[in-house]
Image (cartoon, rainbow, N blue to C red):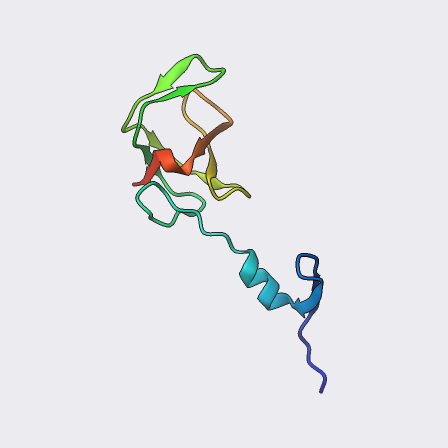
Length: 97
């Protein structure tokens, strides 16, 4: 009864599991303020005016943010604006375009 499937030790449960099962569990869904599923490269629109700490400026409601990147935290996205690099936004303040 030999299978070619790889097995991975899951530290959370303390058990050996098939690699495909662990990979499926690792997928995190990131949703915007309206509940739409977000993915890397999506465009989003701000749903609220946001003061940017350290930049001394405010991003207005309706501002389009292009080419987002998902982070390990499902409540945050990494993005870049024309005037602000290294911007991290909370998903509760954006809506998929």
